[in-house]
Image 1 (cartoon, rainbow, N blue to C red):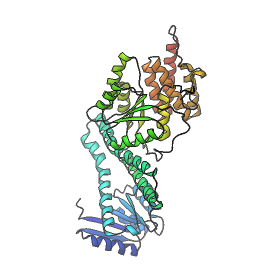
Image 2 (image 1 turned 90 degrees about the vertical axis):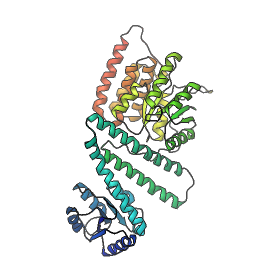
Image 3 (image 1 turned 30 degrees about the vertical axis):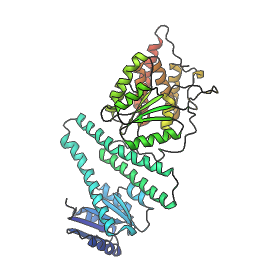
Image 4 (image 1 turned 180 degrees about the vertical axis):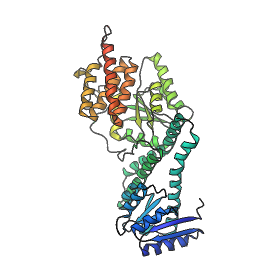
Length: 452
């Protein structure tokens, strides 16, 4: 659609109409056509005619709010973009965007340049939302192709958005004026709205970027000073994760591709590796395979956690096949990331003799053999205790790797992911599988594994 030919529907008061008509007239864009109605019901009737490219709606209407107007319109399948405006500055932005509006403007922002830009951007984003699913239908011949296309789009769209929110969190850690804090809150709301739109467009389970990615140091995890190799092609992602890790006492070496990651690994030891899956030159899976091949001769094992913006079954399978130990979203919270590090890195004692194991983790003194940990995993599942379930999953995987039981380690990884997704039926099935594996191993003569 040519941006010089736009039919705008305005639902609001006569004063609103005059204000917006004057602003659009000042843009001097031929073909701009404004239709005005003043009531909720008149607006619904105008939408039913399907003659408009975009709708501007006042928050304060006669019967219901502008937010309810947008929600009702979306439920009825109206595909045009909506912009809600109000005299209440930015206080209603989150409500408007969560309702499905493409943008929110205060009346002070109903000026020619701002309004014209908002109209164009809203129409652009709406076109993307409509055309991406069409692209899936037209260009994907098989379900596998569709899945790959969705995964690629999800990665390409989520990675920069995760970076945006991460940088906003970095900014929040600095000294800000009250006005700057207000702007920061608006920016965060807009970013989260974009994530919600990506979820809707790609029709995947929303992950939701967590606002506390860079929360204050987590005190519930008594960690040692880990040396972390971070591999990700996004400079912003490297900046965000490095800041978080260093802030919590860890040492970080950050690189931009798989070749650099393998090179660094060969030069010096690391306690754990965080590896992006999709990188140039060499991807994360191939880098992990090279590291695992090298470990066959060194008889060592460095935990490798995959970092990615998606959680597709294909990604998970590739992680397992490459010998990775775990899987983290790039939108992981601070507490989740630090708990993961403490769970995968082998505990060691400091000079005082104290262990750096996570507080509450299963320890050798508790009789941490496979049967004990599996029993506690079952208890955690029955109680729906997320924290204990995570710790037991980490411990079970570590014990399995020490016993050279890669199949058991893979199943522990899968059950961890299933629990995070809330797929309790699959968790039950995997618990049965884990129990059978442990029972079979126990029958082997002389088998005993207890991590010390």
